[in-house]
Amino acid sequence: MDDDRTILIVDDSRAFALAAAEMVEGEGYDVHLAHSATDALEAAERVRPRVVFLDVVLPDGEGYEVCSALKRTFMHRPLQVVMMSAVYDAKRMDRLLATGADDFIKKPFEALEFQLRLKAAHIRLQAQTKLMQEREYYRQAVRQEENLTIKLLDRQLGLKETLADLESKKAGLERENTGLAAAARFDVLTSLLNRHSLNARLELEARRSDAEDARLSGLMVDVDRFKAVNDSYGHLVGDEALRSVGDALRACLRKEDFAGRYGGDEFFAILPGSGIEAALAIAERIRSTIAAAEIHLGGVRVRLSASIGAAERRKGDSVAEWIGRADAAMYRAKNAGRDRVMS
Image (cartoon, one colour):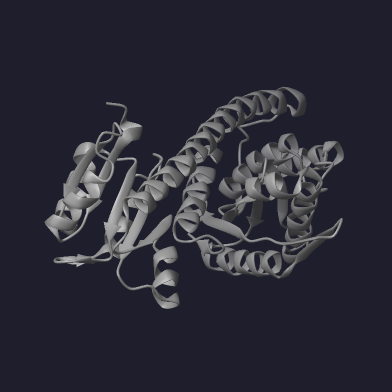
């Protein structure tokens, strides 16, 4: 059985769950049932469903908490959660979105409506799978480019990693800094550091942080639903959206900070001398500035939002480890409902 056809239906009423399962009987689905929060989590671990229909009210807890737990468990695997409830109101919908639910269906429902919701979930699954595959491709490319950049910098700038004392290390880093500033190249679209220059700056600031025992934090900024903007309004509006994010970063960062385009719709900001508390404050300024801006182009008006992950570098961390923690925090912000900052 293709695991894309695996469904989990969670409802405290066995009769209702069985009736829902019968609505897709003969359609080639592998349907599993659970009747409590505990059963749902255990079944999800066992059968690893791709679509979960989840009742809001369960005998041993709330469907909201189960939804959040499922999204955490399957953070790196495509999963669609459709919440079910006999009650529909704005407050409940806000809470559903906050837990990461992907859709909602009001009980009771007819077979056709259930089948349409299931089809829509599979369409979103395909898009989610493609996005994850693209992210993994770019991550592999990033790692390869990062390794190449380090080798080129070592060769071109003659870095000395075995300096005798702290003052010599600081002097060497300052000479390197001057060389990087002269050779810096910028992203044409956003006027921020391009990928090559951002990688070089990340390595330099990491070494400076270790040499001077200074705090260093970073922000991973990802535009929410950027692909939908591109698909709906075209690449010209998409380009304008990226410029708007670049403008917000320049407006909110300090003169000693750096920001660059990490790839696609992702940006990374380097905050020398900042701990996590200062980083979160700066990230919130960036988030609110992006949310307040409105793009006007060819009669189109678009508002953006961004999910931001903040991470303070630990002494001795590699750049990849540091970025990885900021990236993970950004994903937590997206899974928590987007348009927010998390660490």
